[in-house]
Image (tube, rainbow, N blue to C red; front, side, top):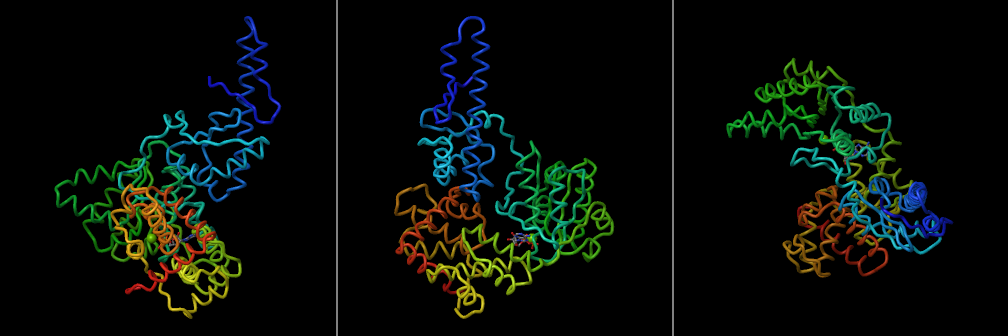
Length: 474
Ligand code: ADP
Ligand code: MG
């Protein structure tokens, strides 16, 4: 039993109980009192957590689950986290919210520390995902805006993620490019990965499936390929229309499908059109694709587009008014990828000019009054300009060096990559020495703050963005 000592403003006196306890009854009494103490601590912590969530709703959604109280005594609160990444992120980005929350609830100054809760860690689940699988961390259900155009596809993905193999199997999602198919597929995988034990997931594009099949044949390792795909709990293949006219791959996929289906495991597919409209696809595959649920995604309505723009802006740490999101949603109607492109353009212009994002700036950006081609910026473009400006080498940015002269350009690269491209935090971290997404998130919030508080930083970011967006080729 871990002793708890509560001394944080709430009237609670279990030390006294200990002193009074004596004789045969003492042990039971202490245990009873201990339970009370532990419960009281849990209650206080629950209040602190609620308060912290209210103070920091953006981070709360992703990071405040599964936190425990390890210790609460005198002036200090030790919070248990499920893993090291959470410890690092909370320490770097949320300590202030927890300190304020603890002070508010207890009425005392409390210093907050985060550590891995070894109990949670021991019971942490085995690796559930096939090696090499890259999940886009922004593509979650939380970040997906639901509207009439995608309601069925979204609901069926949620249902499947809650009970694999038994609701809709296969689940077939179709729709034009840029309407959210890949996002939903990743969201199912994220959700399953978070909540289930030992589930083996294969998520890949159909092109990847075909290439791996070809490589397996070349290397004489078909058996290895088959065991890799036929024994999974969930196979998710994006853009299955890529199978068209590839007879041998269709044959292999047919057997893969049967093996997984017959094992009662889940299959999820996406395509740019419904199964019957995919040309040159074998009839037996078309028929199987129709066995479960076929759900289409239509272009989003105006209201959904407005909500998506706001969601995307929020993810990039931008606050934009309703007027601006409505303007963008009216201006870009075709697909959501283009909506994001519009936001990127506005964001780039805002950083370049150092101005706040307002309607006038949005109009300038989207009506081409300012020549700015921000749509095809790559992380390499950003790295090239930043390393040139600071006179550092890419190898330094990718190294473990933590001196200010290296950390600052590295963090600026991360911030600009997040603002000017749609790469995920994980991908950005990958380009900069394999850093994890929490590090990138921390860098972005740090530079964002510096930009607001330090005019020199603001001017430097403008200058760098100007160079990046005006680089030849963009
Ligand atoms: P597709 O695979 O259908 O071509 P994607 O899933 O790649 O489309 O989506 C393109 C972009 O639009 C992604 O950045 C995705 O996050 C975004 N997107 C699509 N639909 C939604 C939605 N309903 N809510 C939020 N973002 C969306
Ligand atoms: Mg896609």
